[in-house]
Amino acid sequence: MTLYTSGDWTIDSQFILTKAVFDFMCDKFAVLKTNDTEVEVNQVDLTDDNAFGFCQVDEDGEFLVHIHNDLTPELYVTTLIHELVHVKQTLTGLFDYDRREEEAEIWEFILSNKFWDTFQSATFYHTPWGNRVYNKNVINQGVH
Ligand SMILES: [Zn+2]
Image 1 (tube, rainbow, N blue to C red):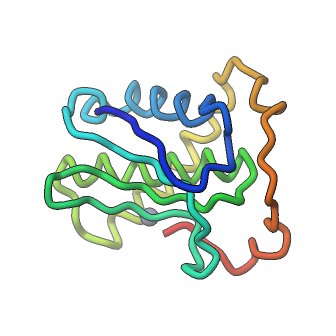
Image 2 (cartoon, helix red, strand yellow):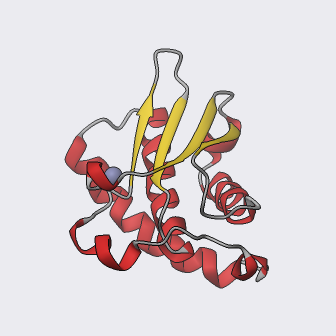
């Protein structure tokens, strides 16, 4: 897959985490690496959607992942992993909503821990992710 980014980009301004998570997930799930479609990660204010992220696929089979643009780096990584699991599920034909969420929640926990265990760069700590209203809004939001 080819990774693109778009939107009101506020988290991970140097794309360090985004690229690292994408590569990590491609190593974990070969179908993500070998498929020749595109995935676009779009940072956007999802406050009104009451979600951290969601995943769409268009008629050409290209994926659009929306992620709330006011997450901490930790929640951003977990959410991006969750949504890329949904991309993997679509590519492999898993469309049952409950099974998709169940599997994505298992993987997001396991793989986010593994990602941080193996992540070599501390550069992201210097990356500004301003516009934080995280503490006000986090309580009512979930990952879908
Ligand atoms: Zn989900």
